[in-house]
Image (cartoon, rainbow, N blue to C red):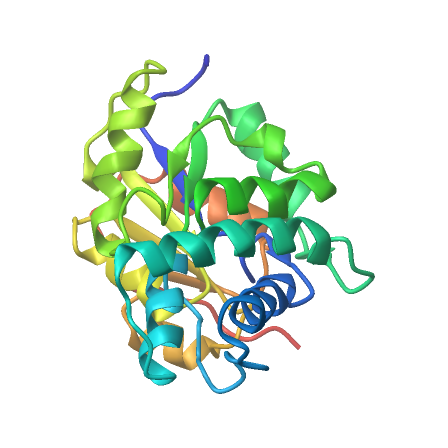
Length: 241
């Protein structure tokens, strides 16, 4: 990897980069139906910002089932198999401005990767149909640690093997939920929140995001923020139109 190495940008996946067309939810529901005979097991479980393992354990808890490792492992295997099928749906789409933003980061020579609650294999399954998988050489995943707040140091270590040596304060996390904001703040990193998921601009601002944008189409604003050297501070854009 060549180019500027004094910044590292890390992306969430679901509702930040893509809308999977609820492929993950359907795959989880199928896994629970297959294993436990429970239909629509996750219909009342709010998943935004949770890691896959946390979601699976929450499903077990809600339905009064064991969360022993053997049960989780069995769910993971079925989930990934079903996810490969469910991602092939007509509702999936890339969020606005994503390709253009990634290309702009490449042009600037700014390293970027993933910081996501998805299992790594699940992340690749979700990104591959869009041609996005190849953009991300490394990252940290829900299969590394079920606590999202512990993923940033893992991503930094992985990128260090690619010649990108940064501190947490040099990192910018881009996501769509307050949990993404919290993950950044836990380590002194900055956060760009995009209002392309279930949370409003106001709620993302209140969560402490340093910059809130409607979509990644606001490319120049995001790039200026990423390249800036000022200390962490909260910035709220005004609504457009």
